[in-house]
Length: 226
Image (cartoon, rainbow, N blue to C red):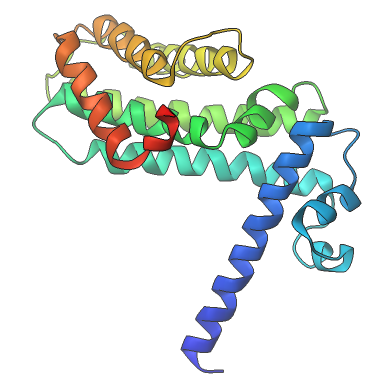
C-alpha cells in the first residue's frame, strides 16, 4: 500500500479513536462510569457498536486510555514550554506549570474523570492513577535535579520535594474541578507557581509570574479566559 494512503488511513483511525474518547468522556461525565453503557457512548459518537469494538474492548479500556491521554498531553505541554527560555528559571518554571495545568483545564471533562469521578471504581483504576502520578513525580524530580545542578535553586531533598509538588498541584486542580475553589484558572496557576517558587527559594516578582502565565494562555489557551 502507498505510504501516503497508509498515513491517511492511520490519521483517520486516530481521529475516530479520539472522537470515541471524547464521546466517552462526555457520557461518563453526565452519567458516571458505572451507569454509562457502550450504547450511550456509540450514540454520543454517532457510530455503530461494531465500530466501537474495532477500537476498544470495553468501558474499562476506554477509561484507561482517557487516563493516559490527558496525562501524556500535560507532560508533553510542560516539557515543550519549559524549553522556550533556558536562561530564565522563573519563566521556565511558570511556563511549564501553566502549560501543564491548562491541558487539564482545557480538557475539563477528561480531567474530572481522571481526578474525581473514577475514584474508588476498582483496583485497576487506582493503580493507573498511581502510575500517572508516579510518572509526573519522576518528571518533576528530573526537573528539580537539573535546577539543583545548575545552582538555580536550593533543595534539601529532591525526592520528597517532587512528591510534594505533584500532590499539591493535583490537590488544587481536583478541588477546582470539584468547584470547591471558585477561582479563575489564572488565579489557580498564579497561586501554585508563587507557592512553589517560594518553597524552592527562587526569587520572583508577582509581575513577572503573571506576565509568563498570560504569555502562555494568550498564545495557546485563550478559550480558558472566556
